[in-house]
Length: 462
Image (cartoon, rainbow, N blue to C red; front, side, top):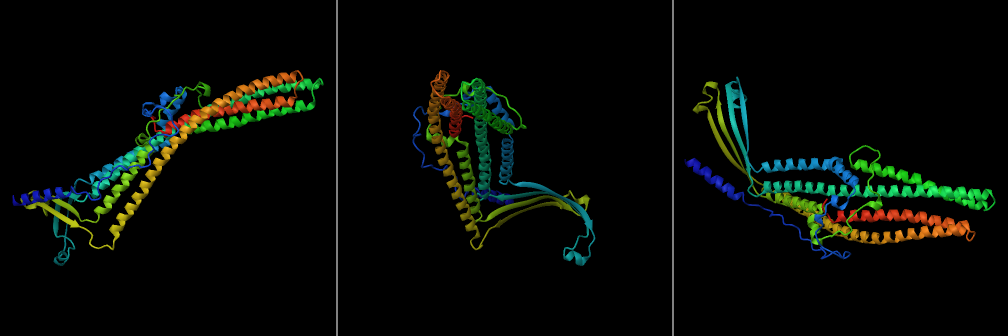
């Protein structure tokens, strides 16, 4: 009973001491450079998180591509495996908080002379041993708890890394898809222009053969036809590149991809509420990941500080040992041993203190990285808002330019047919229209992709 009281006192003292946690607890970093509003945005500040990507885009083919990518993209699968790895590592570290139990079994025998036995050179006779073992390092100063918190925050950081990858992949799939539809449109414009210019070349050639126009008109018409023709293989080459890029994202081999709505049929949400700037810190996965990386590194300081103090370990052994099996399980063979050990540094020429400063400087670096991620996030939103607004304006101007160029070409051709202008003026107007149609298509694609960039920068409901 006297020994039992002593064990209870030791256990209670150990549990009391284990409540200590040197190094403190991590607190969320305070961002002092958060703007009160987005200066380039005028409108609602409702949360964007209510809008999901499948609500943002109604093109069913694009939705299918995104779902395939989220199921099969290799980088995303790697990120998922990394999360499971971190989960298991966190479980291993957490298990260090508790005692470990094991066993030892041995049986054998030997022969040794008296002199050999004196120097532990062997045993004389048989030996049978069966023990249950206990080993437990008491986490008095919080070294293991800090390591546990570091591994857990690393695990959560890997989850946020995958979330950020999902945001990037959905954005990249959408941007490539809209680029593909733009290239399809530009290819169609080039093919339509080539058909029209072939007809012009035929008419001019007939007029030249009859002596109505000079040969220079015929040569200029042939040049115009070639300009339209050479654009076609260029767009076809780019289409193949974008198709393969899309298929790689979806985890499939090279080949063609399905098409859905044209650029002009795309239905997108016209107004995206960006929310308050402070909400960006909670929405963007890259910011949340950076915060978790900072928390991980902060806990390494606690581990380093705990190494300054002594560590307490408990070991125990319970079982039976005997030279003969007949007496193995009897009271004479019973074994019960318990030990407590304490170990710590005395003088190591400042190594442990330097280790603490190393972790503190590393934490400072990660803190600066966190601040940089936040600054980049606010810049992304401001850039995206400016792009979406200005591309809207630019596309409207391009659309009016196409209307004007098409009308100007009709009038110039009429004047040429009636002999009131040279064919050179027709050529100029044809080039104006061709360039304007291509530019209008590209600007429309940039306008839609600006919406993708804006949605991504806001960390909205992917």
